[in-house]
Length: 116
Image (cartoon, rainbow, N blue to C red; front, side):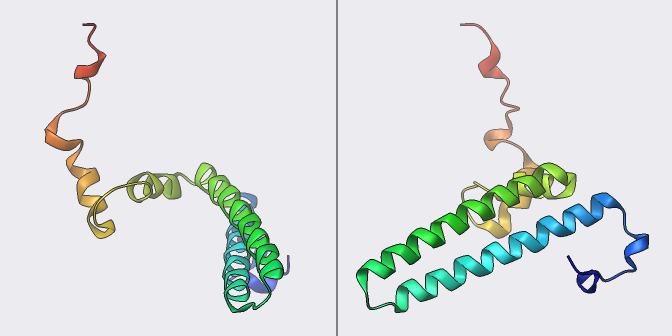
């Protein structure tokens, strides 16, 4: 990876940050590939080629999700935000407030731990 994609002198950047950068750049590349394959498949007039392009796009989605998971596991800040915004219901812009207010109804959710 060329140092031209770094915004600070490479000798001042830790190995952890370099690896995060590698992951972020890889995720960007995978997302670009998903976009390209989606556009190509939609524009394609040949059904068999379209099926191949959709298959290729789906492979890129898999790669993107694997990279995103690596990034989540490697960055506490990304992990915290992923837990706030991903796989939630309701308006996305309100997810942070819902997370701050806790579980619905003000319950801590521990009542289910009692033996019945």
